[in-house]
Structure formats: C-alpha cells, structure tokens
Image (cartoon, rainbow, N blue to C red; front, side):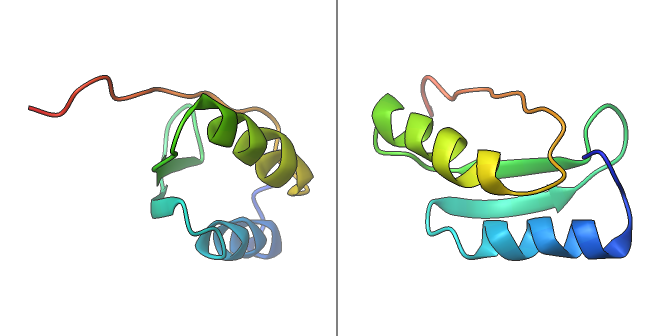
Length: 72
C-alpha cells in the first residue's frame, strides 16, 4: 500500500471481504502489508481478479502472487 492510514487499510479489507473468491485476509508486517488467500477456478479468473478488482482498489502500490500446485 502507498498509504497506511486507517481509512486506506479499512477500504482494502472491505473490498477483499466483498470478493467471494477471497478466503482469508491477513494484515501483516514486513515487506508486504497484506496476505490474501483466494481460490480461483483457473488462470483466467485469476487474471480478472487482478485486473478488474485489485487494480481498481485505490492505494495499492504493487502485488506479488504465489500459487499452490498441490495439497497433500
């Protein structure tokens, strides 16, 4: 996030909670401000999530993604 004031943090959390694919949102410390666990149907749905939801939330500076390849 570019700004870390309570209004921007609350707005991000509110937007994530409105998204059905988002399972968990963690406000964390260190290199990133949030960790978001989301379940997507496929890469196309992930692309739509990034381009049409995340990109439209004001104050996001950058994102980084990781993908689960298997769950054993």
